Image (tube, rainbow, N blue to C red; front, side, top):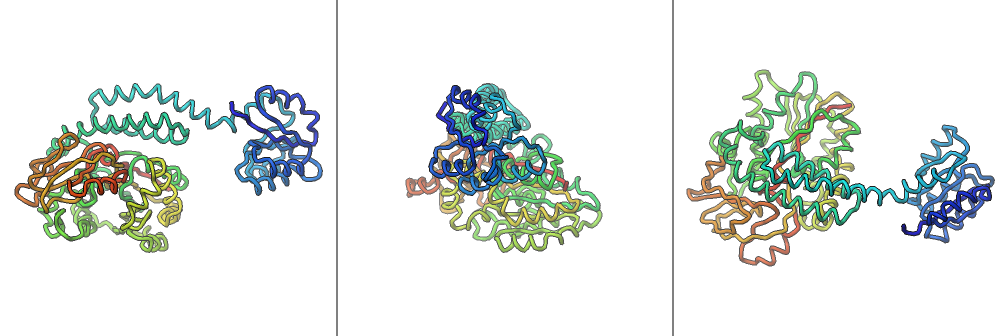
Amino acid sequence: MEQITILWADDEIELLKAQILFLENKGYTVIPVSNGHDALDICETNKAIDIVFLDESMPGITGLETLAQLKAMSPNLPVVMITKNEAETVMEEALGSQITDYLIKPVNPNQILLTLKKIIDNKRLVRDKTSSDYQQQFRQIVMKIDSGLDYTEWVEVYREIINWEIKIDRSDSTEMGEILLMQKREANAAFGKFISNNYLGWVQNNESGPVMSNRLLRSKVFPKIESGVPTIFLLLDNLRYDQWRIIEPILSEAFRMEEEDFFFSILPTSTQYSRNAIFAGMMPTEIERAHPTWWVNDNEEKGKNLYEDALLGELIKKTFRKELKWEYLKITSVHHARQMQDNALNLLNNDLTVIVYNFIDMLSHARTEMEVLKELAGDEKAYRSLTRSWFENSPLWSALKRLAEKDIQLFVTTDHGTIRVNTPTRVVGDRETTTNLRYKSGRNLQYERKNVFEVRDPAQAKLPRPNVSSSYIFAKEDSFFLYPNNYNQFNNYYKNTFQHGGISLEEIICPFIRLRSK
């Protein structure tokens, strides 16, 4: 055990020799003082103090007064209040002043030792326990991945991996984090094969596979709309399951969970395809056929998601016999977000409000998005932390808290996720080839086959065919497509950035959550 130094302040310190000797025999260093003034002087001069035991009822300067000054001096220093007085007001004041723990006199040595273990050794104990538990589960996850999973089982494996990722983050176990990262890569390799083998079959026969983007609203939202209960459908762009897990505790302050479900994003896992499919209730070729002026191909220089509200209106008209009062909001700037926050209560007048919230754009200005995210989110843990910090301080959360004061139903979901890319793979195409890093559409594409799912006939995937000989390729695992020209320059620029459009657990398996005001 590393040397832990305890400062113990008590006006009856002479009576505590047995407890101090006990701690010293356990390897702790104890500095005894008999009053609050000495405690403050030592804390000011000795920065090696790890924890303070503080008697509440010392003469002169009281324990509570000493506590206040200690916290002003060293806000993060753990303080254990020791008191004879169990009065509620005393304990409330101590707890309000951010004591770490408290003990009631007379204290026995084992109580003290337990408190020290809980406070000082807590991180180490959590890390050791998490590592031990994950090591036991590691083999079981491997066996599951190798056992020929169906799509619901893949969702469970993905959730399990993410749960361990978050636990290991909290335990600060670097070694276990590296092992888990390797296991997630192996899972993504197997998942890529699974999607390659099954995706076209699901597209051809809707009922054979998971609910995908084009069936999301009709399958999971519209049947839940209740008369007299406003429904908010919140689509956060690029929201992955791990990011949902990070904001879930914040939302639970105002909402109770009714259902945690999932859907699979269609391919390509990009806004143009997946989000249009969600609001149209159709696959891309069906949108192109039904509304040719509303569908814009990859190689055309126009906005690709300009008609989401119109597509949604058509879907609502086809689905509901009775007239539904609905509204569509797209939040793409802080200004739009503030407007929504100010007018939040007006949304209660609608049966259904659909909010598309481009929260990645909220994190950073679109043109510098990649550089900013690369700087702030150096790894998955930092990306999750950034998501939590953004959400907690966003106008969106302020608006949702206001809405939660009334009885509302809230759906939280996304259009697709993102994956951090690390493995460049070369591709050659003509000028008409699309620019996305995780999928390409074009003629006579040349590429390395190892990490690619190819769709030679776009009609099989219900994707538009900009040219007669167009085909699609999708990157698997953490690979990203680069042209031979300026290969090294673009590799350095895009490596370790978050991208979407291809095939991975993170991009395809989308969280779908139903909540209700508490």
